[in-house]
Length: 237
Image 1 (tube, one colour):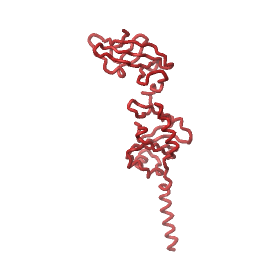
Image 2 (tube, helix red, strand yellow):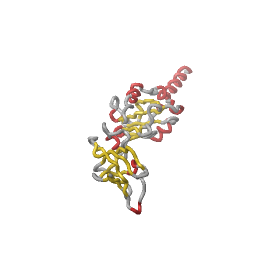
Image 3 (cartoon, one colour):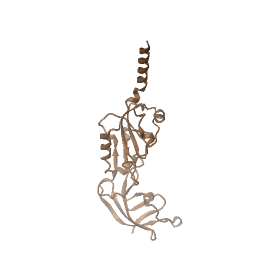
Image 4 (cartoon, one colour):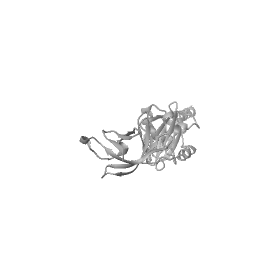
């Protein structure tokens, strides 16, 4: 009787701890595949189809896994012992299928740093671009045009326009004293250069102001002038 009681206790312990015994380890093949894409300015996880998954969760350093799982209604038992809660050097990419973690990739922050952390990302939306500070940020409607940059357009150029038409703008130089700038304008689909010239800022006499940050000021190019977001515009010299 005593032996059967001991065996029963052991079985109960094993039953309740079995979730902790099957801990996912970082998939190094997946890590290498992700890091091999770092030469590009885009990381597109939506094209990752080597295994079935439907959502992505990126855990930041010192994340407490159980509270995050509870708040997002996820089954994260199989990564509950991951060391992310004690490590500053990594982010953990958790791939989810039907509300349960099925694969993880531990990514060194010195190699990749993400800006969207501890929140759900649907597979089809899991596309990131490299920002000016080197971090990877989730692509949304506000920055989707950044993906349109094609070969031949300078990397430091920026896109501006509206839903109907836009262009790439490359600011070669700014003369604040004369309130003008040397600007190249590129066609956004072909990359062909449309115009390269010096432009002067023109404003109403009662709203005179100077060039400060053209990346923030430029609204769109109308074929003759570069319209700004205030009441001013840039006119070709």
